[in-house]
Amino acid sequence: MKWAVISTWKMSLEGCRKAADLLAQGKPASEALIVGIEDVEDNAGFTSVGFGGLPALDGHVYLDGGYMDGDTLRFGAVGALEGFRSPIRIARSLADREFNNFLVGEGAGEYALKNGFEQRDNLTEESRKRWEAEKNKSQKLVSYDGHDTVCFLAKDQNASICAGVSTSGLFLKETGRIGDSPVCGSGYYADSAIGAAAATGVGEEIMKGILSHTAVMYMNAGMRAQEAAEKAVLDLDLQLNRRNGSCDAISLITLDRHGNFGVGTNIVFPFVYACEEKEPKLYLARREGNHCIYEQVDDITTVKQD
Ligand code: GLY
Image 1 (cartoon, protein in one colour):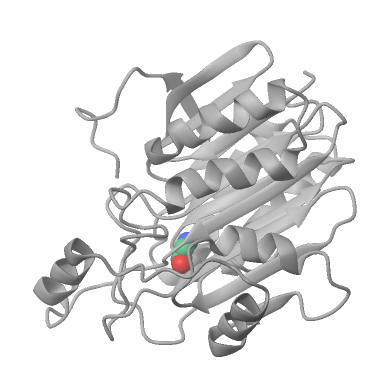
Image 2 (cartoon, protein in one colour; image 1 turned 45 degrees about the vertical axis):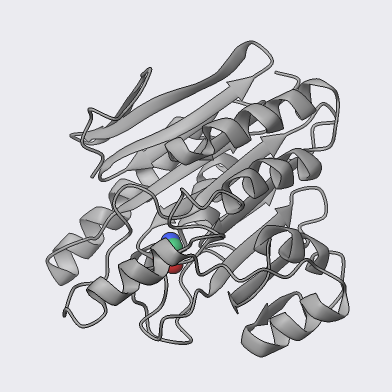
């Protein structure tokens, strides 16, 4: 396949269409991926990413984002960033530097301001109301109601592969908490000579298995994208169940260097895929025994997602 793109959750459908159009025109994977992710970051209707994202316990919306260039293995990331429009665009710019590639909190904000990135208060009236209603209830932190992190993996017509992710992280997280998403190797990994992977779900679980890098190494050892994704997820699920008695929601997308995709999940997990031969379509994946299976669906409004 000359080009291909895969992205997480139904919320990425429109962004995936935009990314697919750019890849079909011969644009670089990095550009397509940023356009795709920004489409989600800018939509206040998607409550776990960017504008209108899920507030932390202190009522502020802190965003995490990560980017990796599979040609150079350079990566950039921001964590606990407040007040800017596009964590993915800032993360992408940090990948061009030799050092200081992963910035968090005030330092990330200072960098973004100094380099002219667009500012935005991401706390909408709706996200503030959600915080107000839930902040005093004691609740277990979970990935949010079938959304969580938007992840894109893209392969362009020059065979370059990139990975990118963006999220507001877990609802009512503690101030300063950073999940898997901006952590290279856990939340995302890309190597154009092998393929790429990116994760969504509960970051504290995903980081225990360094999930994205693990799946890429499985592909390097000869596994197909689908085998690599399901082995990475289901092995971690098994280990955490054995050792801790449970494993929270984890899902993983993979893309090999030919543009074939894979998906691993321990929940019911929607994703979007497009390539030269296939227009962007929504798919629904679920675990079945020791495998993960998926089917193309027209909509998921009637399907329970997690
Ligand atoms: N996967 C997103 C997070 O745990 O923050």
